[in-house]
Amino acid sequence: MKTRVDPDLCTGCELCVDTVPDIYEMNDDIAVVKVDVVPEDLEEDVREAAESCPAEAIIVEE
Ligand code: SF4
Image (cartoon, rainbow, N blue to C red; front, side):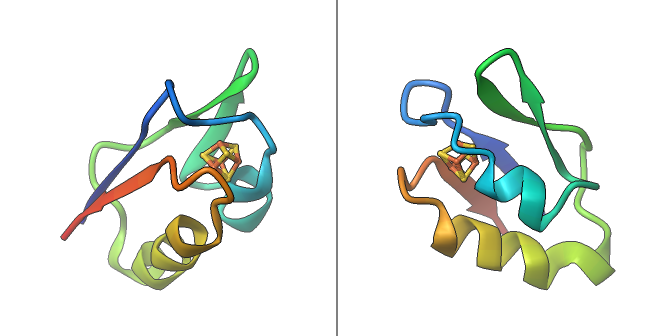
């Protein structure tokens, strides 16, 4: 699985960073992805972060 954040949509609420800090981090006011490929044990957390993102800015590629 891969994930990325659309910088045009992200509002910088930091919810994804709080939910999956091993995958998302803040870069200035925008969340960015720290890894190339999501480790299997974090895939469910990433799906949850994508569903919870209030700006629908998180893209998940299965
Ligand atoms: Fe941006 Fe969505 Fe993460 Fe909030 S949850 S920081 S809007 S990507």
